[in-house]
Image (cartoon, rainbow, N blue to C red; front, side, top):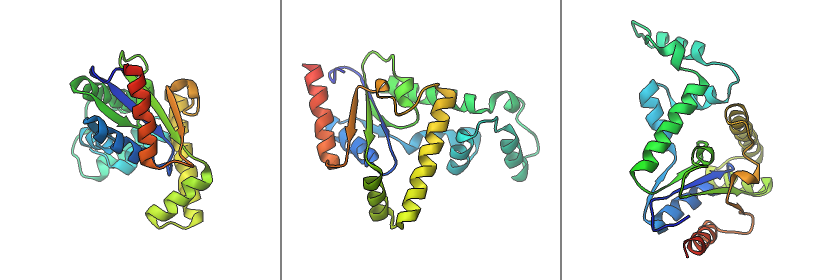
Length: 210
């Protein structure tokens, strides 16, 4: 990746690994924007759904038209969107996410966390795909400290999130998020701070640029 040209860096990360913080610090050092929740927020505006509903629907192995239609009717809409039954599937949601991601990257250099961006930009001429991971114990400890969770709550959150994300990736992208061939750089956070991880990525970028 050449930082002197328009670029996109994707960060896939495990819940509790500190990957989102790494992404934010990296974007600050590079002087570019960091995108994460904004992607889902834009989807909520387009489909009039909540963040929680979209995340839940994405992980299901069936069309979520029935759920969407029930939500649509529950909130008092008089008519159904004419093309909704054709459009609103998990596949179309993925395609919408990809369109939004590509739109962001076309505008300017950026760092994007999650949202299958590693797949979306695998053929981008100037990209870097990074995977941030950590041992389960470190992830549990981080969630307990950051979100005031019990150990059991942290483990449950990790298991549910891992399962949801992996189900989505396997079904719609036909790979696994744990296949290191999807990434240019894999970082294990157990003995690293977020700043140290950002240092590693910056060093990697600088060596490529040179």
